[in-house]
Image 1 (tube, rainbow, N blue to C red):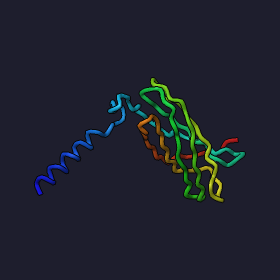
Image 2: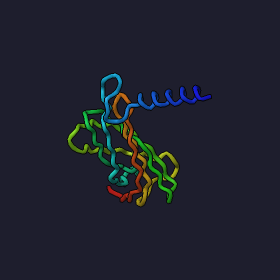
Image 3: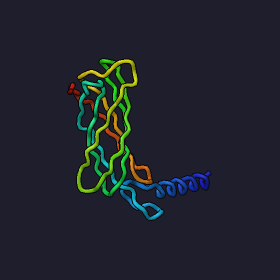
Image 4: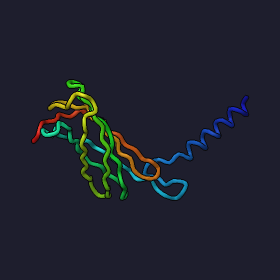
Length: 140
């Protein structure tokens, strides 16, 4: 029994040691970029009724970043999803925005939306998440 437990502990330690953390060197010699995301605001387009969500991404090295997510408005029952790409460069935040067509019969209205956003980049699949509730106003 002791030998089995010791073997399991050694295997677990080896597994944990093999995990690559964001911003650290991988066994293959490359690095995973450090990545950050922030959802900063948005508006409702008066012509389409679609929200336009905006924010910033940051990275430690140049990377093509996929920004995706969804928004729900509990007061109207509206729901939408988005998917966008942005070229991120180190040294400062890079602005992104995305349009969210509503996927339900209910349109978005001015007011609060709960927005969940995910940024992913790099061969190692580095991901960061941001979930906020924002007030959206009508424009146009």
